[in-house]
Length: 261
Image (tube, rainbow, N blue to C red):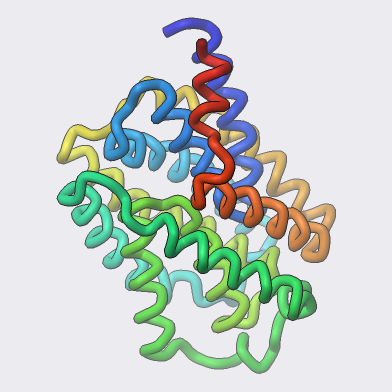
């Protein structure tokens, strides 16, 4: 492995960790990099989970330390998400290529409209929603989010954030805390399943994860200091770039191949 590839894995990991902790969609960068390094789609998808687990675990600890997971319903919702992720991970091993990219792109555009149309709903808690219990609808939605997350991962955080705001009534910083905790839990299951299929490139994954640790740490501190309003604008920017990637308007694969060669 050349020094260029090592630096690229670590530096891109910092960017991915920062983006994923504040919003979601950073795994589009990871997948594009792994594909440019010659991994097939399934191996890239599986290898990507190492960084997701490490950065989510670190961010969860930091958010919990600051009290953002206090009085949330995160563990009640984690179970259906984990079950869904197990199903999605198994599905990804059975299917040769992801088929959800355009569906995700359309969903992100809908979320972008919501962010512009109702910005205040992301800036503060909705006490009417936060005071309600967990119903069957919550379990179904988080199960489906888990299926998608286990299958492809890219953009899963956007769905959790949307559910955290629209269903649970949390502000955007608290939804980030819930998101990182749930993702850490279901990624453990996904990695176990991918290991059974020997689909993980550990060397690339661990080097990339070293960068995501620093990126996650910096992003969590940024969220604490800047609050919900600035984080919301960061999420909007990331959604735009992620959608461009998913609709193949922005070619990250070509960008990384240029750097490598």
